[in-house]
Length: 415
Image (cartoon, rainbow, N blue to C red; front, top):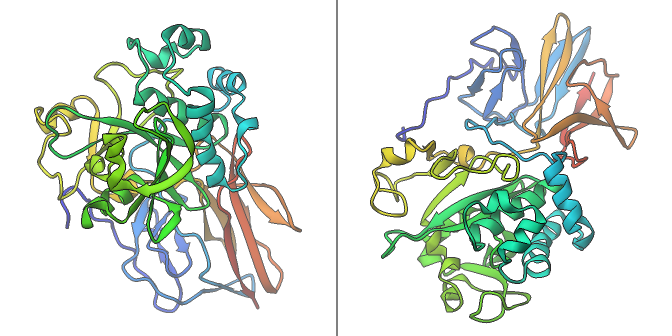
């Protein structure tokens, strides 16, 4: 077992049906085959199943036999470390979005096109050069500027996360750095959750840049993807998509892709080796609750590559960062928790089944169920009384901005 990873309790499974009793409260859980974990909606305990089967669920209720197929989004993972999201309805965020007119400037058709377009709006259209302090004061951005008289990479990362929040998306900032630099070196970037790719995508707002693998140039990478690729052949299979046209950081053109290892021609911060260290800040409420110097909630990625070594500056012991509320993890689902998915459980409620919906959706508003080709609001818990025959149920979570997550689909036959 890896250091720092806690073992998960196991469920006792019945061989003929995909069901188990919750070891904590005793409620009978019914869940589709193939899911690795399940959380009891009654007592909220998380359990890991020892074996994944391909059999569908089969059970009888009210004289009817149900058979639920394995096509289903698995148990919803709740992050071990809470993330404090900016709300789009906060007056400061709403005013910021209106002031910059972000939404009307996005031209993309897919979600990733629009999230990538946000880089262009921020860096090229709104701030083609580092803004002077007087302009920042006039725009009401003093809270995130703090004591600095000049904008740096961190400020562009803050603003990207805030612009994303104003559009109903979830983004966060990351501090990255290379292994054993000659002097303290760090760079601030951002990650944004994408429902289409079902992953966190790393972007560099300062250079309007993002990464992909050479064999899949249209699929963006996360921080951990870039980091892993940097250890394989030195990152030579990574493409850097950027708009930097010359060695001067404020000269931009149309987006183009170049080998990431050649990025040092115009910036040392875009090389994959800079992604050796990574620390995710656990809040993006920069206007309403700006960070204090030396005090911030953050999550540091720690694995066998950097085990036992001080972070970035090469001088402070590990405990120094814990005192500043920095937590370490080597669990990918803790560092990159999935968002906006909907998990569906079936529990026996007397003689009839009952549906429970759960989600981890930042700024959650409601659940919706697809009925008659249209999405309509649904309760989080309701009894199930389907008719005999084939069925397809679809549920999804919607946040307060009206942005819907990936639907959970469950299909089968009722005999």
